[in-house]
Length: 368
Image 1: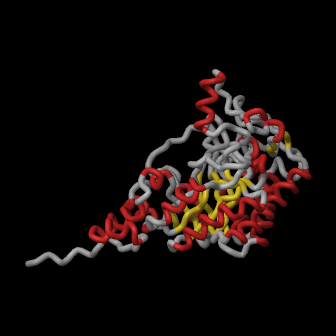
Image 2 (image 1 turned 45 degrees about the vertical axis):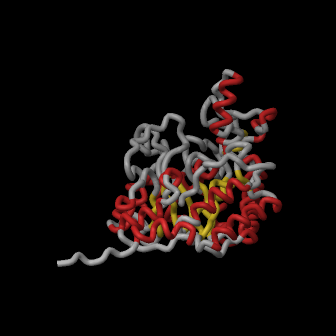
Image 3 (image 1 turned 45 degrees about the horizontal axis):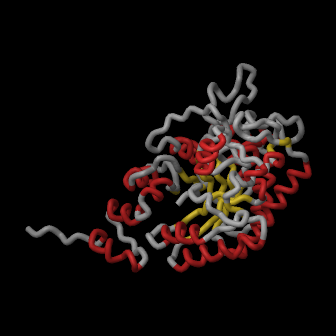
C-alpha cells in the first residue's frame, strides 16, 4: 500500500491517533503484505498542513509504535515516508480549506498563524511560491540545510525505536527535495543550484546521510517529470524543467548510494501541470528507469486498479513492485479480491477468512 494523505487527523501537533491505528491496522487485517504510512514530516514547518503527521519529537514514537506492533502481529510489514514539504507547507487540509473558503470568502490555501499555520517560517531552495495562493517561502541558508538534514537523521533514530521495516524518502510531488532538483523551483546560484550536478546535490546529501544511519531497506520516491510544457532543454541546451532524462541521472546516483528501491511517481511541482491521466499512466516512467538501471528495484504507481492490470506490469518486466493507494481506499479488501481474481491463495486474518475461503479455495476438476 502506497503512502497516501487520507487522514489530516493528527492531534497535539503531529501525533498519530486511534484513527490511524484503525485505518492502517484495517489494511493489515485484510491481507496487505506491506504498508507505507503517509508522509510524515521531520520538522514542524515541514508539514503540509497543521493536521499532518510528524516525527520530530520522542512523544510521537509511541502512537506509531502501537500501529507498527499491531500490523506486525498480522504478518504485515510497515514503513514510513519521511518528508519535508518545503514551499508547499502551512496550507489548509482539504476539508479545512473548503470550510475556510466558505467562512472567509477566500480561496487561498495558506493557513495563517491564527489558523495554526506558519507562513513566516516556510522554507524552500529559492524564494519562489508554488502559486499565488500558497505561502511565500524564504530561500534556505546553510543553517537551514543543516537543520533539515539533522532532523531527517533524528527521525531515522526514532524509526528504529518504532520498529519500522523500511523508510521511504519523499523526493516527489513538489515537496522540498523535488524543489531542489527542478529548475522551475530552484534558481540558486550556489553549489545547490544551476547545473544538474548542483541541483541534485542536496537530495543526495540527505539520502547518503540516511543510508549510513539506516540498515534496513531504504526507498526513494521521485517525480520523474514535472509535466511542464515544452522540452526538458531549451535551444541552448539549458535545462528548462525536470524530466525523464534528468531523473535517469538522479536514479543512477541514488543507486550508487545503496538505495534499495525507487518509487516512481510524477508531477506536483508546477501549478499548471497537464497530465494525460489514464490507467497506468505513470508506469512508462518506471519502465524507462528500470531499463536504464536494470539492477535497481523499481515500483510503479498511478491508476493501477485491477489485479490483472497490476500483474501484467510485473510479468511484462515493466516494474518490479506495484504500489497501490486509492484503490485500497475504495476497496480495503483489494488484496483478497486480487487473490481471487488471479487464482492464488492467501491467508487473511482469521476474522475475514470465512468470507473468502470459499472463493479462494481451489476449484474441483470438472467431471467427465
